[in-house]
Length: 236
Image (tube, rainbow, N blue to C red; front, side):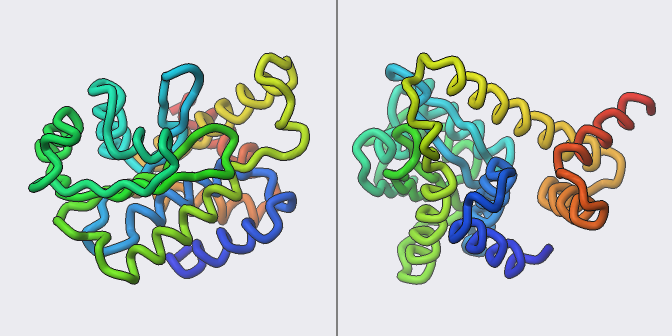
């Protein structure tokens, strides 16, 4: 599935989210698109307020994105947390923002990241933000990458917007069960991608595309296909 096809599927899902039960897979596809938004873009993630003052990263394109998000959490602040908390777009530039976000800036510079943009997701279940990281300064300053980043953030916000049944109090058992189930599905997809990456020398994006194509060809749930891949890996 090429980038155009991925965008088409994402936009179709946003227009009819009820027709796409595997929304967690689409979120993973969205962050993959974010990691390719400009030639300098290298990673993408979603930051979410998990409860109290604790933030976590439920979806990310690669280990770099997760490491950078964790640098925010360990430092206690950074553009992704500020965007989620204050619901305002946040830019980061490695040359000018070292004093504003010192802990995150050090981690970013050490990993070759020179700029980022974090966009709030106001319609999501909890305070959240979409984060895009780049290897050059000013990667998201031009009008086109900003517009595409805004579009991607709107898509992600729609996919993360709770349905009516999700509006139950956080302590309700059904809501907790749905959250655990969603995390389990995401972990299953992640394990299947890792297995395909090891077996066939694929990138994580190509591994996800392989799962989606096989699911369609076999008219089966992507989770059934992923479970089969993971079980096969155990027998090797």
